[in-house]
Length: 259
Image 1 (cartoon, rainbow, N blue to C red):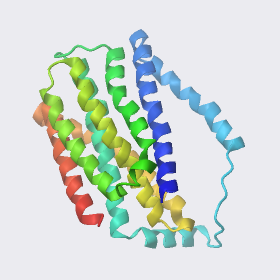
Image 2 (cartoon, rainbow, N blue to C red; image 1 turned 30 degrees about the vertical axis):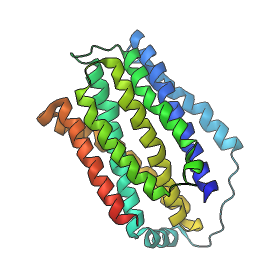
Image 3 (cartoon, rainbow, N blue to C red; image 1 turned 180 degrees about the vertical axis):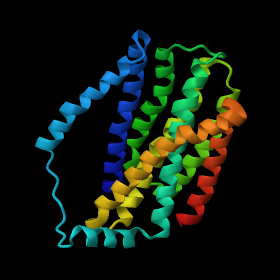
Image 4 (cartoon, helix red, strand yellow; image 1 turned 60 degrees about the vertical axis):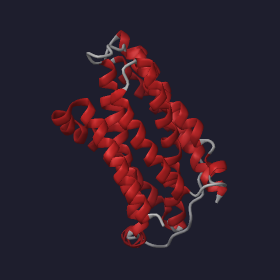
């Protein structure tokens, strides 16, 4: 149990280290020209070549053809807990990309705070740093608390920090909710992935995690659209309050489904 949680925690930690690095570097590059940060994507080319030539991953043997494999995997996915975990992933990324990375950044750069792109990158990246640090300790945390408990606590923390943000009037005080938000994210995401990996039969684990990745990307896509509609109605405060309410709803869902 601890080995799987530790591995998922380290994976999430590495992923989230990249977020603050990108935000800071991207903010600095955007100070020179708005289109410079897009050049960072070129780094993916040598990384992809390295993975293609160096990564060795033993695969479980499966004699089914592709159609049979998908059918069998789908039968395994038709599980209340699995569907619940996919839903938690979806709404986590709607909150993250819709409210935090989009409208929180716009709030910092707007008429009230007039933050520079570099300062926006520094403040928003504080979340990624605490996420990475917290994720790296997931193996230790799961010795004391179950993944289900950690997920529920994370959504409570999401709700509290999102409710607090509209009432902050000094720009550097935003570091308090962003750091706490990062702690919640650092236990939430790898805990969801750990539970999914445990629920997935070994021969269908790739399908489970791939579908979770698809749900994750769907959340990234829907987040700005959903919160954009809420912004038109309730402004910046509306996006944070709506996401806080969504976090409470996800806490209730986790309490019902993850028993």
